[in-house]
View 1: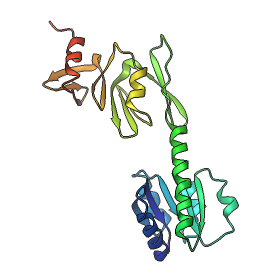
View 2: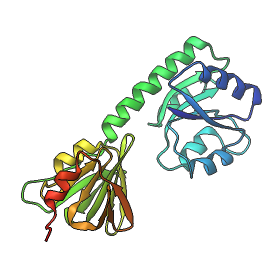
View 3: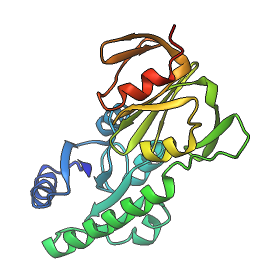
View 4: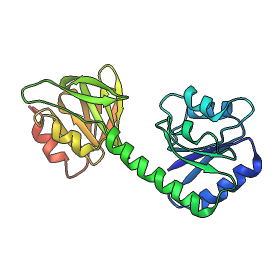
Length: 236
């Protein structure tokens, strides 16, 4: 998990950073002495976990959580025991660590964060829903069901735990796998041409060597999938 530290005390940041370094599943991306710097960073970078102090000069930790959209998982780190009840009113907060932090207590917090991350991924994984005899499917993005017509899709690209669905009008990043969407797409229209790409064969503009041009995208075609692609084409 990519994580950041937000704490106005340099020593506190150093201690947490050291503890993070002892856990292979954690990667410290950045640390901040104030919340405003962190907000700017989060506007341009994805983070899985935040170690967040409650008492800071410009923002409280709770102000910070309320300010950012779709906050990642948060572990509060504070010397104040009096906010524990308020803390767990926030869905994103997975644990509440009171300074000084022991390694054993830190380990338990990371276990909770891992469990929450797994649960969140399972819950948030975008379900790709289709029905027989329909011309569209739906993806769940930010708690909204977005309709996408099959004919509008040009390319689907796998990117780690996500897929990038490109259409004529707009692109969507969805938490799912290439295999799941491949099973939903109509076989007469779409073809997996590479381990990371599915294309709409009707959108092909040009083919050269081991690649196809679709819109402005040059898509690689693997040697194993090229024969099937050639069979699909209406060659003279």
